[in-house]
Length: 111
Image (cartoon, rainbow, N blue to C red; front, side, top):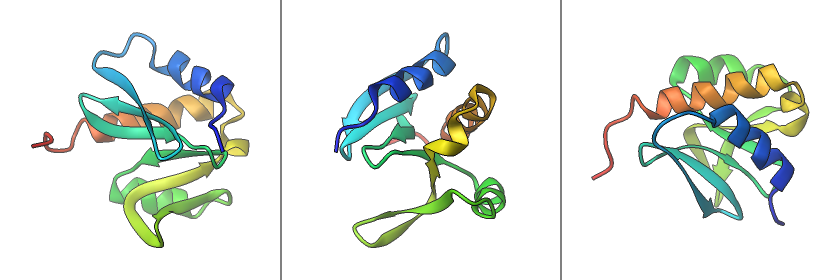
C-alpha cells in the first residue's frame, strides 16, 4: 500500500525551513531523516511513525489511536504508530513532527 502523498506534503510543510532534513523511501512509506537519523515516517498503513523518548512514549501510549510500532513481529522501543485521525489538526501534527525531529537530533551519530 502506497503512502498518502497529501499527508506527506503536510509533514513537509511542518518541516519547511528546518536544516538537515532529508526524505527516503522506506518500509513502503516515506521516512524523514534529521541529520541522517530517521525521525518519522508517513506509513503506507495509514499511520505516522514517530520517534519518541521514554517519557513521551509512555505518555502518548495512553492515548487511543497510538500504539508501539511493531516490525516483523518485534516491538520497536522508541517508536510510535499514530493514527491519521490524531493528526487531522495541524497543531497536533506539528507537535508530533517537531517532537520526533528534536528527539532524533539528541541521538548519537550513525556510524
